[in-house]
Image 1 (tube, rainbow, N blue to C red):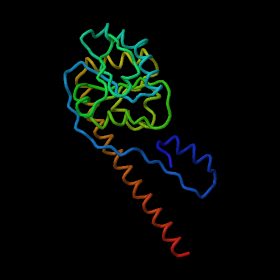
Image 2: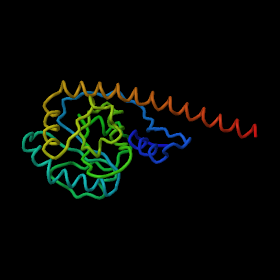
Image 3: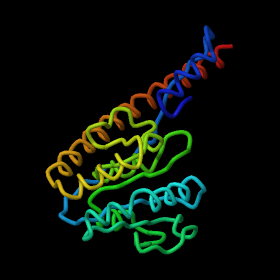
Image 4: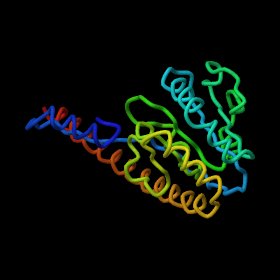
Length: 214
């Protein structure tokens, strides 16, 4: 079982001509209707791990100083366990751990994901889209979101990351269209995963039936 399509391809190549089946099952999420605001606020929420720390360090060094120079009335919010591992900074506000994710997402106009390394499906990206928030992400952070292009901007480097943030800070209509795209993506994403779950259930029932017959 894989959690994103490129992993399924990798596993299939390993299995070669084996009769073993390989399928992809993502993370089921609940969709929350996104509210498009005029707030010039963007944010990142993450757990306390090294990948997130490195991502924030990259953000501070290469992105936020330039963004805030171009858009001085904008704000960046950092939330989650990551706040326990990063220093205070004039470039962002630390919100800390949040008991209610809705409260965090209601404060931001769009989400960012600056991580530079990592594996698997980036749940924080799926989560942001499930709250109807447009996403600006590095290529690493966009793993597993191949069909969400209209809801996010994937950046190759710091310059593209800066341009994407500034664009969304200025363009309310773009944020709104991306929020609507996020809603469509999550609907199709969940629909696909529900179908795969039913497929797995059928496979298990078939195997159990064969075991009983034996």
